[in-house]
Each structure stands twice: as C-alpha cells, then as structure tokens.
Image (cartoon, rainbow, N blue to C red; front, side, top):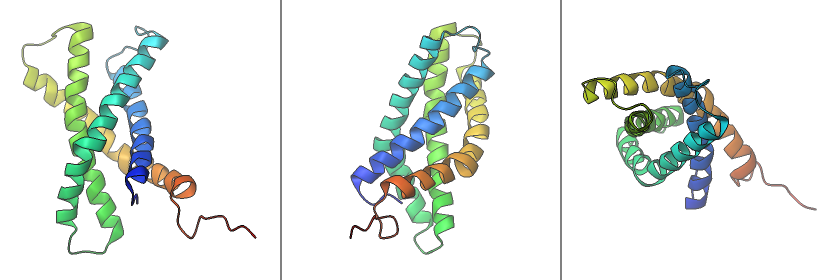
Length: 163
C-alpha cells in the first residue's frame, strides 16, 4: 500500500486514529469508566494512547512487523496473504505494547488491584487482542485502505486529469 515515507506516515496516522479510538472506547467499557471519567479525561486518555500508538507504529512495531511479515511472504505474490500477514504481525505487536501501556495507566488511575502483574497483563492482552484482531481485519484495515487509496495514494487510477 504505502510506498513512500510520507504515505506510510499518513496510513499509520489514519490506522492508529481508528484503532486507538475504538480500543479506547472498548477499554472504557471493560473498566466501567464511562460514568466515572469526564469527557476531558476521556479525550486526554485517547490523545495519550494515540501518541504512544503512533510512535510504536512508526518506530518499533511497524518496522519489525513488516520485516517478519516479508520473511513469511517472500515466496508469494498473493497480495491478500501479504496484507493478512502484515496485519496479524501488527496486531500482535501493538496489542502486546498497548496492553502494557493500558495496564500502567490503569494502575496509575486505580492502583494495584491484584497480586499478580503477569495475570493482569495476560488478562488485558487477551481481552484487547480478541477485539483488536477482528477489528483490524474486518473493519479498520479495509476502511483505512479504502480511504488511503481514494484520497491519499497517487496512482494512475485516482489522479485527476486536467485538460
């Protein structure tokens, strides 16, 4: 999809915005904080989560996920398989790190609620992955690729010809 650094930035911004928005709302629901958190607090949590996600996407998870995915798909020209592999690697990496972020934020807001950080982390990761993976594959992935190809990617198919 993206072929330049600028296109990768736009694609990542759109993808992170959508995924972080939905996952923030999902985590508010899971933690029953819709009635407890102010609108400003919710926006602040979203912005902080978005900033962490875009940094991870651009500098850590994205590059590593692409290297891993390209190794798995080096011998194929099957584009849907390549997209599925990259998406899977991205979701695993982002869910891993964003669950750490979410757990830290939860501990800051509510303190330690159990005796096992590992159990808490595995619970958060599992709950996030179960929603993030289908969200990425079924909703956000196709939606962002459509938006990207329609409005951002400059290909012969979407260039406006001037007479």
